[in-house]
Amino acid sequence: MVGAGGFDQLNSYIDNPDETPAEWDFKDFIPAAVNNVGIYNLKTHSKDGSNIYGIPGFESTSCLYFYRRISSMPRV
Image 1 (tube, rainbow, N blue to C red):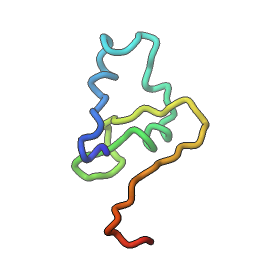
Image 2 (image 1 turned 45 degrees about the horizontal axis):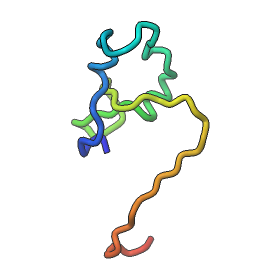
Image 3 (image 1 turned 45 degrees about the vertical axis):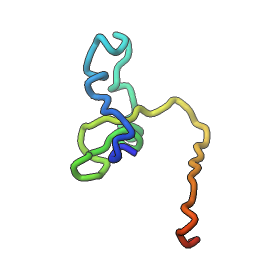
């Protein structure tokens, strides 16, 4: 979704004190969680670098993804 333009890069919001509360600090998030859901490099199409596109949530629930299979594709 990030590579297709489905998300905005969040760095400018995180770095701008007018866009975030004073007590909110991005460094409070666990780095492994940020790397898992938030970092993406559009040039290399990999999860490295410093471009932030997602912020980890404070939850421990399951997440399900639904998709629509293209009918002309063979089932795997």
